[in-house]
Image 1 (tube, rainbow, N blue to C red):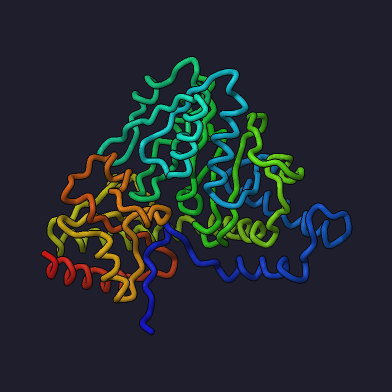
Image 2 (tube, helix red, strand yellow):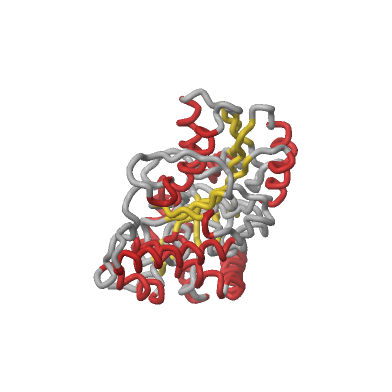
Length: 379
């Protein structure tokens, strides 16, 4: 079996050994239900609260402002629908962007069917919203702005702090999908004037199947499911203790060495882009050149089919993607690349490379060698 070169860390990451080690007891030895009053139940409850403190510390929030969910998509749904439903007597207008993750876009479309009005902001060629357009979109019925921190396909980082200032000045709640950003960017919910933030553990070397939602104290939001009174009566269901513990450990580790991690990824990204520019003609970088996640490089190759390209790379043991893993079954062009106005001849030929802790310069060289051979043959 050939060695695998994994270059799709925006899709998911492997669980760190330290994270798994901390999780394991809660699958067997410490199996208590956190709602039980006896000792093993109390220990499970304590482990959850310790994880809550770790998440809060990482984003400068209060522990009581952190709610555990099943994933980033659930966190987005709970924040957007929960706030919208709680404020529908005050207003019915929500502002988002055209390049959000489908967890946000489809939540907004669902609310449209209930009578809410949604403004989908345009983005420029780099994938950044216009703050003037945002201000002009605000009405006396606007109750929520939801703009992602960093795009999952092209890596572009939005001016979150400035958006937060605009929202605060207009007494509008502001939520951000930070699923791609947490573990890659320093986030301060107070400095950024955030009222809501979504995250998912498997994007920063934690387990799949667990996410977290920050909702600022006193921000109203309704629960989406009925049942028990877990998570301060906002998310019914017995807590997934082991994975919550894993999320807490993963986010703690992520922010212990964030600068070192980003410096490594940035070096690999810049080397990769420079090699592409030197060796492969008709290749175009998508997203902002510098205002992007350190490990993200989304490049389109003129006249190449991205799906076919992925299969050829996979034959060589290289794991990459054309964009969001959540849309891998779709034959439609990426809504993100369409929104930035990418030319038709480049639209189907995107390759998203997202680097991680195990990647090396040798991985990049092997990738470049294969891309050269494949593009020359097909062209």
